[in-house]
Amino acid sequence: MLYQAESTPEETLFCERFTEFLSDLQSQLPTRRYVNTLLSDLHIIPAMKLSPMFNEEDNGLLRELHALLAHYTYFTIDDQTGMQLSNGEAYDKHCAGLAKLQRVSLKDFKDKLAVLALSNYGSIDKREELQSLLEPLTDEEILRLLSSLSFRTTYPETLQMPLNRKFYLEVILSAFEKKETYQDTAKSTAVMPTEKLLFDGSFQRADSYDGSHPYHCQS
Image (cartoon, rainbow, N blue to C red; front, side, top):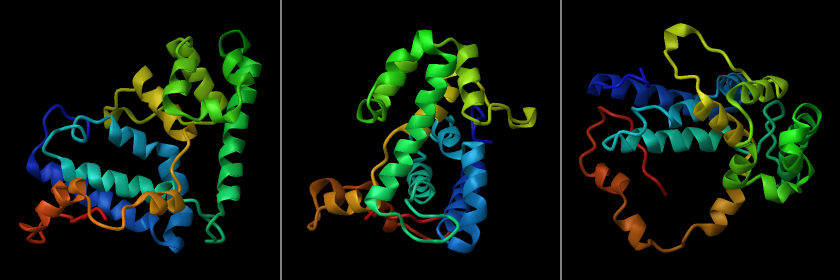
């Protein structure tokens, strides 16, 4: 449904409601410990981000709900214990993922990914830098890299997802780019309303809210 060339208002509403439902599951510890692993395996976040419906100009609410889902999905918390990770623990977990990427790169793609394998973590956890380092790989090598990292590379044909280089690269970039923690977000949030917040579309949407659609107001 997300990847249809044209979508109806009813289909858009369904996707908005379903994204809201996934966010609810991710925001509660009893369900998150089961759902988060599944959503991560299916690459829901990058799949939504690249879909035609997500990128339609009028679907701002869907993009906001996607951002909310990503916030809960990447929240620095232990899914099993429910304890929030400290900044140090979250960074260690992030570095462990980068270390695995470097080991696979050095072992299987030494000729093309030597720079990636030997670089420091701070230089490869930025989206633009990592994307440029992966450019030498062919489409087949991108698939091999994903398989070596134990990432899903196949989906049922009924989903009609375009499994191409763009999608696979987005999966890798989404997995290894450094994400802003909740603490960092809180620190950068303005205490007083800014001009950008005052004219934000989500606040204007509140004036006409009638309960028929999901509602998300950025704060």
